Structure formats: C-alpha cells, structure tokens
Length: 361
Image 1 (cartoon, rainbow, N blue to C red):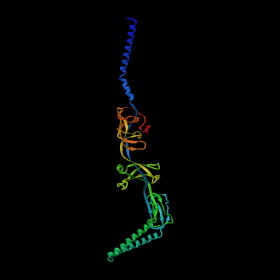
Image 2 (cartoon, one colour):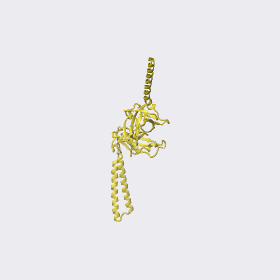
Image 3 (cartoon, one colour):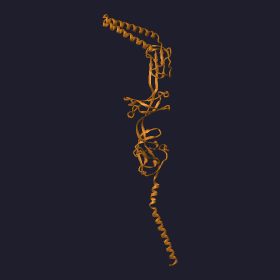
C-alpha cells in the first residue's frame, strides 16, 4: 500500500472518530439543555409567609366630647344677691354654695309659722278631750285638724323659702357660667350659674343603620381626640330611634376624666370594637386587581404556581390592612407581583423581613 493511500485512510479514520465523539457528547447533553432553558425562563419573585391572627373588627365613627351632665341653676325665690362664693370656671363639690340671697324676714316667718303649729296642736288636743266627754262634734274636730295641717304646711313652706336663699351645687363639677354678681336682684327662675360635670366625659356620635347593629352597650372603644390625646372608653347608650332626617342612631361613650384634662366640644375619632375574625395583616401597597376588577393578593402555592386570591377587607389600623379569604398560612408575593400572572410557575425566594417591613409600604 503506497504512502498516499495510508495517509488518506488515516485521515478518514480521524474524521470518523471526531464525528462519533461529538455525536456522543451531544446525545448526552440533549436532556439537560431543555431543562436549563426552561429554568432560565422562569420569573423570580420574593415571597413571605403570613400567618392569620385574631383581629377585633372595628366600627369607625366621628363625634365630639360633651359634659356627662349639665344643669342651669335658677333662683326659686326672689331676693338680692349677697354672696357668690364660686367663681366662673371654678371646680365645686356637691353641696357647695354657688349663689346666696338675702334672708330678709324669712327667719322670723319660720318662727311665726312654728308658733302657729304649736297653737294648732294644742287646739286639736283640747278638741279631742272635749269629744271624749261628748262636748265636741265631729265637724269641730275636723276643723281643728284642718287648721293644724294648714299651719304645718305653712311652716314647711317658710323653711323651704329660707333654705332656697342658698343655691347649691347638686353634684361636683365646674362653674361654666355665672351671670350674677353681688348686689344683683334675682327674680324666680333667674339664672344663677351653669354647672357641668366632666368626670366622666361623654363622646357623642351617630351611627348608620348598618353600623349600629355591630355595636352593643358595654363595647370597648378607643377615642382619638383632635388634641392628640387618646383614651379608652365604653359604650353607655345606643338610641333605639333613628333621626328622621339623617336616619342615624345616637351613640354615647363614657371616658374616665379624673384630672379633668379632657375638655368638652373636642372633635374625636371613635374606634368601637365589634366582632372578632381571623385575618391577615398586610400593607395596602401589596394589593392587586383581578381580571374582573376585584381587589386581592398574589400568592405562591405549594407547586410554586402564582394564584390570585380575592380578599375581603375587614379593617384598617393605619399601618396596614386586615383581610380575609386566605388559608391560615400562605406565601404572599412581596416583590415582583406586577410581572407575573395567575397560573404562572415562578422561582420563589423567601424574604427574611416581616410582611409589614416591606419596601412597598
């Protein structure tokens, strides 16, 4: 065999070996390449486990603070004002004198009325003794008894008139207004002062037809005042009749105010605890819209498939929203939700932060 033929055969053998080695290598890689291509095409999202918690559903209302009680103190007799011990804005205790009128001749009238009673009692006893001896008729006895009762009534009236010269506080509170001064003359029904009780303090609000059925007497309420103060209170009154104009029901909440730091007439936001539900607390920024326009959240199931789940909003605490409609424990997409759709398989990377610490807030 000549040299040229040997070279040609050797070259052909090398070509065949190179071709076969390439074919074997390609055949061994064929199952891997499609998987790598599919994996490289999956979207990556960041997810976080969220566990449902018990949440007290709240009824939100607006109202204003008001005195627990307010009374206008008026004169029951006529007379000249000789003392006004309580100044406007002053705190008073129950029984404190607010206005005092001149007694004039009222003490003497009490003495006179007492003497008339004493005389009538003697006359009545004498008439009874005469009746026992047969010298007094039933009519005469009735007349003397009537005179006795009349003098007793006059005595009681004169004592009341004397007592009414001192106008006193029926309960502890503050003098909100006192329009009279020493030397003024007061007729009956003239105003001495306006007394308000601010401990406890009331918050008065109105509820719609749907809201009033969620609240009951004794329900706890958080009250946020426009002054920045926050207090806990309790529902003490719910109207049974709706206002004919607004179709709303009045609600009153009692607030403890031992130091009288809370003032009347302050605008307030009221959060009344209603029923309890099990819900998830999430940032409002994580909400997405479904094809039908309903609000929901995108989650990742156990097969790493994206699912859109419609939600029911049950509350808002100012830092996040409380929603229901999800399993007790669920993986919520926190980053990348806008780039994936329902039914799509994704690569889910767990986030180490809490659901309320997301950058989407």
